[in-house]
Image (cartoon, rainbow, N blue to C red):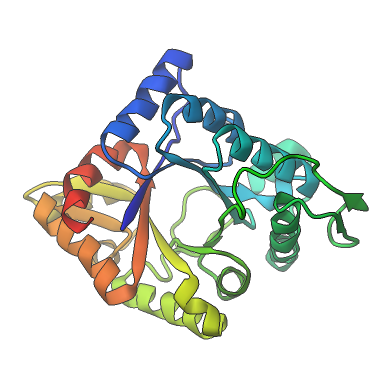
Length: 302
């Protein structure tokens, strides 16, 4: 298995950022990732900075909201990070969901189907551009003809498509290299309360959907799970109740979830092994506040 740390907190400056990158590296994580949200750092400059701190960590975005990006500009930024990291970039893509970000940026907040259309169109275009090919596209992408003109640092930049809905996962299964599973149905904001596939049974359903859509591609896909929180505690139920807090989330669903890992380090390691051995998940990511807890458990499943 491999493990990724999603860095969400904006640092006070360069020194703090470098220290946090070193911590992730020292803890044994494989990938350092940035999200793509207004109100947080732009993902690509910090990844370039991280590449200068660690020559081992792979670097990624989990995930770019494709509706906020021009495809040529996104490909250029991604190719630049890949070049300056000597070929360590992994590019995550999603359809976007937080309405307030679109409104703040002055970008139309289209219906979900339209946003997913954009995602489906972007994946092959970005793959071609990152491979050095010339792309000519008409609708729905705002392009005519484009070549990046940058040297390639790796033969193929791995592309993740992340989400939960049927069509997004079908796109991931047929076009991406990595399938990012989240377990929830996105609403219009950043807080997710529709935990439609948040249980172990829900994960089985989503993996089965990916398998059916992928066909012969399935064996080559990497399945990834985004764990919302890892909590080491002898009182597992108490830790889960504390995580839920005042949010309108059902305790029984959160308590039976591969997307929230709580218990002793040995128990969390057992859940990681279950993800790998029963469900084929070989890539687990979590947010920065949980990296220390995850690090204590992940050595057992390497």
